[in-house]
Image (tube, rainbow, N blue to C red; front, side, top):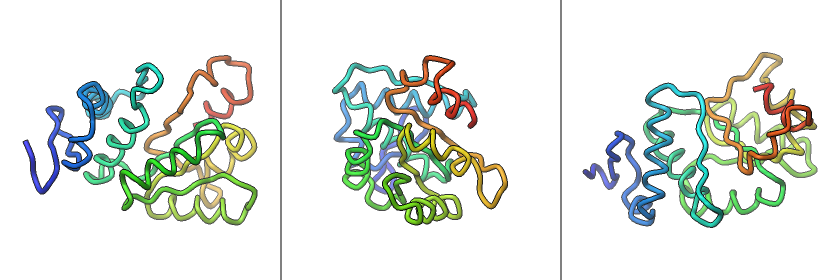
Length: 174
């Protein structure tokens, strides 16, 4: 049913009605699947829909609902460099109120500022696999203490299937 302009999924997660209505049935099922994993305390899952079937919007809808319900505070989203700008644009389009910052680009100062903003308050950090390889210690800590992300989401996760490569080793730190 609906509540305050939000659509409640069978699984219990509330999503803004406008966003819910734009999702296809298979995308709604993907969002419900992600929430079910959360509810059941399962530590991981894979959205394996074919390319072009809207996995990005499923993740955005899921995270939007999780932030609205205060079920998550800190999310690290890792992807190939070529996808960073499109993810930022999709978040801006679908969830303009959500704090989404990039840990990317040449300015170390700006990257550090964005990371501190998300770690001290809440929100999503978007970074690339290459940034992760070069800065994993910074992403895994805050004020020289371990920093635990509520969710770490990998786009194009096949990049970590080889246990001996740097990307895999850096991702497993978390």
